[in-house]
Amino acid sequence: MGSPRAMTYDSGVASSSQYQTWIAGQTTRILRAVSGGAWSLDGKHVRLDGKHVPPRNELKVLIGLPGFYTATNAHNLEFENAASGALGVRTALSSLKRDDPKSLN
Image (cartoon, rainbow, N blue to C red; front, side, top):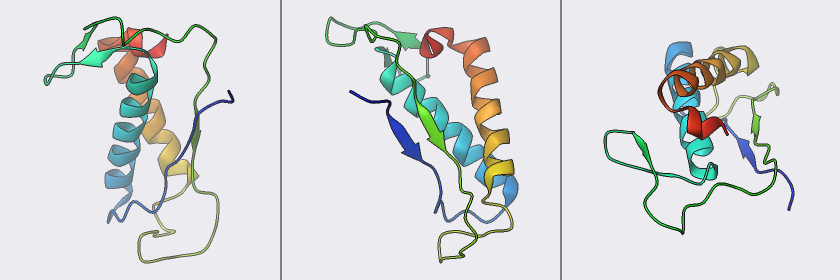
């Protein structure tokens, strides 16, 4: 099995800060989903049963950020770009490291 990939563009948001927040949320949900845990409604990482086990290999997740210059109805070039997206990914990683480090295992 290859590395999971997530292409994170065509968000339809209306500002750079909204895109950063959207990317941070996407990154958080993706990493939690593949970490082998389940989450309570308050976002805390809990182990519920044997169906949610951590990956047994060194899983690497690739988060794709937009690097193209074609505007669409859902893609605004001004703020939906790699620079804004990278800030959102860094925000998510910092928050997970602080609040839910098991999601980064």
